[in-house]
Image (tube, rainbow, N blue to C red; front, side, top):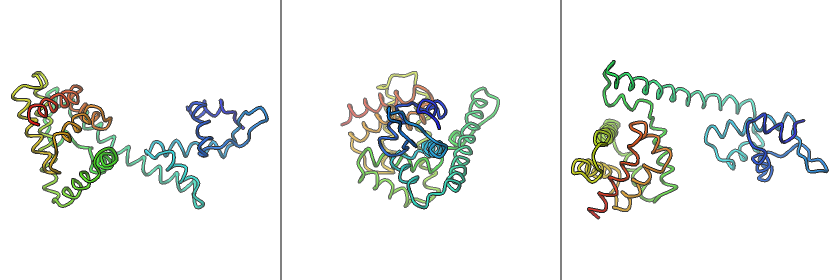
Length: 247
């Protein structure tokens, strides 16, 4: 049996976290002593491991509890499924690491890379995750319209649009030494505005929101910081100027 402190240290979580898991019926202690001390047996240790694995796969605590409390839940089968999912993540991360290594060599002048190769590893599944998150945060009708437009395009058309967007951001990186309100920067923002029309007809409020998302949303910020650390904030500033001048 483990005390709450021993289990917290073992699993690298806080005691407060374990108490919260108890509160929401996600991980109940095996026994509670008269003095209120919680104790956990091997079964609860394995359940906590399952919780940690599902968190790594981006499941919410509520979703994890539903999964683990199913009458047909099989721990061995679950571990096999988690292993396969994590292997897929590892393969994609290895691809991204390879892209980073190749980009470093490209910037050092040791190899040549096509622009399309700069984005190897950013898969369509991840883009769908961004779309779901956008639907949750922003206008669901607008996002559904965008997804419907996208699904009607051929693979070649989708590829061309993605490459067009990537080129816009790469061109913006070249302008980081200029002011956000400069003519050249604003011309690129105008191209970006036109590019968004492949997906929906955006209002200036929507464009402002996108600019804020690029700088503040962790997923978008990580993507643009991979191109240049200053790009997310510069994009937001340039888009804000564009909206102020044209709305």
